[in-house]
Picture 1 (spheres, rainbow, N blue to C red):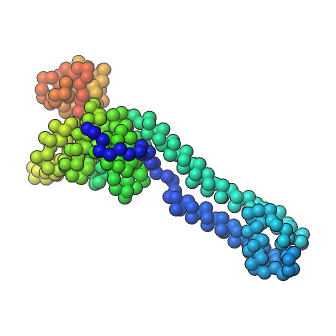
Picture 2 (cartoon, one colour):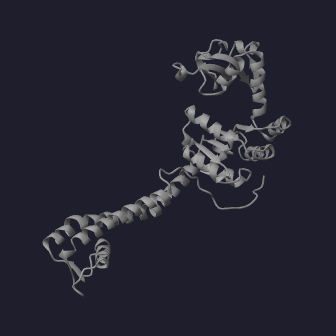
Length: 345
């Protein structure tokens, strides 16, 4: 699939601890407060100062002398003449002068040197991304998926979110994810996050046509990466699979399953929701067969879970089928396990 429009490399972003405006405001407020404190001291001790020009110390002279004292060594037109004034300059004003200089130097470091280094550092991280999870679209479904992943123990720094909306990206950034503003249907955008080295790609663009186009683009760039996509129209599920999606999730169909389950029994829908969420007392788990399980039956798993199905050579086999009586190397097991962290609930 050809690139739609060439554009420069886009570095990732990661949430900063303090917004830029808050950082600048805090530093400026502190510097002004220190300068105001020195003005007050000089005004109260104006009798110990001498104006070499007219011999009179006005409030404007105090402000002028303070700014010169804090920012430079002075010009000599206004000088402290009393012992107390000289002590104040040595003990109070000089440390404040040093503090104000550090504030301005620190601001320059933070907004020039540090941020440039962070941009370079994020670019290095981006160039080394591997086994990460790429989330394409951060609407309701994408946000819930990321939240569930983090609750299941996934490090948010291994999650990369691509989304054109600045407001949605801000939410993802607050969650600790790496973010990139861009169009996920463009090859360059996906190459910027090294989609071919990802462990999984989750697609939820909000519209079926956009989601299917994204799946096509990802599959073109990453032939072997597992892709899961949210599709809202049942007629489009086959198209999504043909585009290359490994898993197609239809929230409408899942809601229908819950409704149908609730009609057939009071606790079926509750159990289905339990399986789907990390907060439930039981969870579905997918994993490769262990070496100690090879040759054994699906109902005798070393994990202690209840085996439901195996995938062998890409084909599913239920627990009642003869293929599950002797597990083989390369089998993928789907099991139900208990949520140990929920035992006290």
